[in-house]
Length: 141
Ligand code: RTP
Ligand code: MG
Image (tube, rainbow, N blue to C red; front, side, top):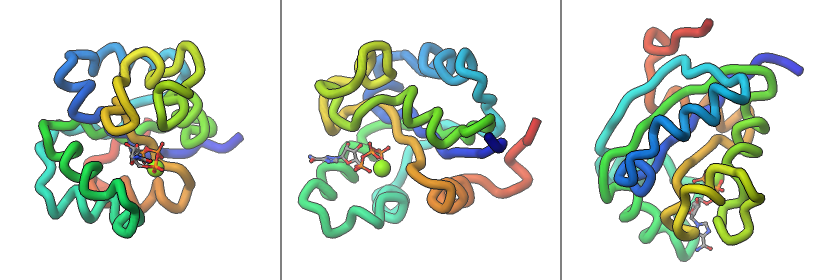
């Protein structure tokens, strides 16, 4: 395994539920380190740009409206196999299908309000980290 970085977002539903710390505990307990972090209210343009790959999908408007419905907590996570490890911790996109003990099974309410985002590939992780953080804001450790 190699040390990777991935982009994680605690979405507005989980921020509103006051479970940022509980979600961070999942990352840290699994050996992932928070190497960059910021809370941010995304603009519509920022959310549309972030999810541009989904622009043609029928759920795009709902997704963007949800992502700007309140502040999000954005972090870069670093560790062995961080991209897949974070996806495993998150669980399936639809919380009804998410495995027991995953973040989405425990904290998500619906396929829209599904608590967390995580990069799905090394290529997208690099793009997504650069979307929100200057390299000087990422503290590899
Ligand atoms: P994310 O990008 O947020 O980490 O989620 P994901 O990889 O598990 O799912 P993805 O396919 O990338 O979809 C992005 C977000 O769009 C919403 N979605 N809705 N109604 C639907 O069929 C549907 N499919 C996806 C979800 O909120 C998902 O997190
Ligand atoms: Mg995705």
